[in-house]
Amino acid sequence: MAPRIRELPESVWARIAAGEVVERPASAVKEMVENALDAGAHRIRVRLWDGGRLRIVVEDDGCGIALDDLPLALTPHATSKIGGIEDLEAIRTLGYRGEALASLTAVATVEIRSRPEDGTDGTGGLIRASEGRVSEHTAVNCTAGTRVQVDELFGNLPARRKFLKSAAGELRRAALLMREYAICRPDVSFVLEHDGREVLSTDGGGDRRRAVERLWGPEPAVQTVRSEAGHLSLECWWQPRQGRNDIAAFVNGRAVADPVVKGAVSAAARELTGNWALLLSIDPSLVDVNIHPAKAEIRFRYPGEVFEVVREAAALLGGPAPVMVRDKFVIGRASCRERV
Image (cartoon, rainbow, N blue to C red; front, side):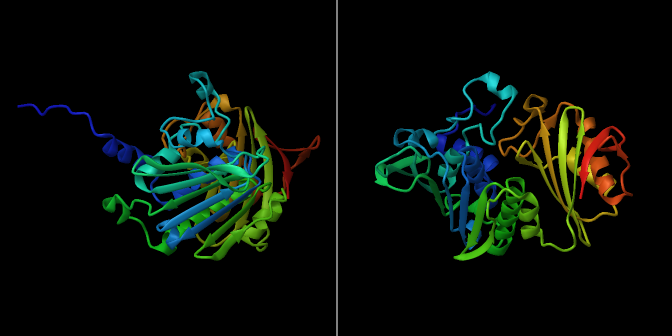
C-alpha cells in the first residue's frame, strides 16, 4: 500500500525551515546584525556567552520597532523591507524574506525590547517567544533602538545542537563575521564581547583604511585598488600573509560566499596569499539574491564581467606599477582609479 500524504504539524515544519536560516550562533548573529544595519544603526553591540550557544544579545541604535508591530516581527514572512513581487527585482536591503526572527523563535527562546527613535516618553515594547509561541507582549521603558536576546539556541533540537562546535570554534565564526562587516561598514561602530570580554571593536568613524588596519593589523602594509568595468565597480583591499587566502566578499553591502568572486581572486592571486576584502557595487536589478534562505548565495546577470574585474584588480595589486593614462590606471577592460 502506498504511504499516505500527511500535512506536517507547524512545530515540525517550522523547525525544518529554521534550520535553513539559522545553522549556528554565527548565522543568528548575521541575521540580527543585518536587521540592525537595515534599521539604520550607527552602533551595533554583540555579546555572546559560551560561543553563543548559551546566549546571544545584539543591541543597536536603529529606528526601532513599534509595540504593535512586535508580534509581526516574529511572524513568518512578515517584513518591512519589501511590499510586493516587483520589489524582488531590485532588492536594496540586506533582509527581505521575513524569516530570521520567526526561525529563531522555533529553535530558541527570544526576547526583543525595542523603541522607535521618535518615541518621546521612553516607552517601548517587549515581546518574548519560544517554540514559535508568544508568551509575553507588553509596554516597557527602554532605550531607543532594538535589543534582541536569544537563549539556548537549538535547546529543543538536541540532534542539531550536538553538531555545534566548541565555544571557541563558534566564537571564531562570529568574530570573522563581525570583522567582515566592520570592514564593509566603517561608518558603523561594531563591538563584539564574549563572556564579558571585548573581542573586537571599531569606532564607526567612516575611515575604511583605519578599520582594516585595526582589524588586520598595520603590518604588513595594506594595499587597495578601485576599479570599474561595465555595470559594476570594485573596491579591493589586500594584506599579504603567509598561508591561505582569507577572502571577504560583499555585493552591495551584503556578505556573500560567491564562487565567481572567490574563483577570480584565486586565479589571479595564487602567489598573493593573505587577507582580501572585495566590495562590489552593482545595479540591484543585475544580481539575484533570492537564491537561498541564508542569503549568502547570489547570481550575477553578467558573471564574466564580475570575474574579469576582480581578477584584474587582484593582478594589479601584485603586478608592476600601472600605466597612467589620462588620470586613470588602465588594465585591460577595467579602469582602475587608485592604487595605494
